[in-house]
Length: 247
Image 1 (cartoon, helix red, strand yellow):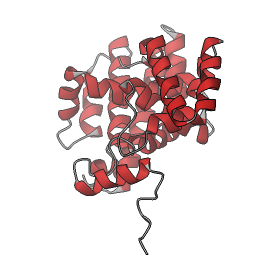
Image 2 (tube, helix red, strand yellow):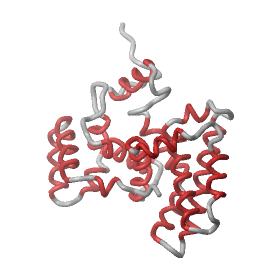
Image 3 (tube, rainbow, N blue to C red):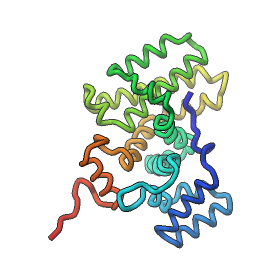
Image 4 (cartoon, one colour):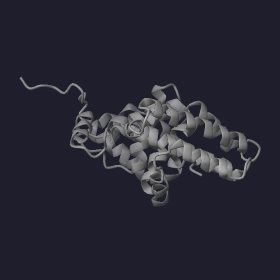
């Protein structure tokens, strides 16, 4: 079952590298970040606008930071912009692209989405023994798949049939599966059940945060030259839809 892992994976070396990137862009901000880190206020560093700017990088390439930070800092920022300050939810949302990008087994599962999408995932969940931990775990992982596809590859999902209606269907399905997992685990593991319940309530914000954060690394139609240009301009703080003209 896919659960938040970013906090567990972050090391002091990772955070030091983030502070170095902040200092590279702004010496004073870097000094403040170093002081906060020395004082143990890691969240103040991760939530700072300077960290977001550092992670997004300049010159057309992401900052040379671990994949965990490259997703986590922007996702946290986007969730805060949507009024969601639940750090565990930010951890969960940022975990999805990291896990699916780095786990060979999960990539194989994800490629198994053969066009039926939520219908096939629902059949999978329904086939598990009802009211069991196994069904709860299957529901939670199906929700993760749906959020990952809809958040990181919305254009692909939309092209599958009903346009943005298909994206909404994925997000709705994710909420239903998270709610089911929360209900089944409420008496067994209340902490995990609480997380899934909160994720179900904030499913729209989680999806929106993933969509915004992924534009720095994936963007539209991932492998096209136009998409690479969009990502380059975005990191230069230029609106890709209205780039500057030369007089």
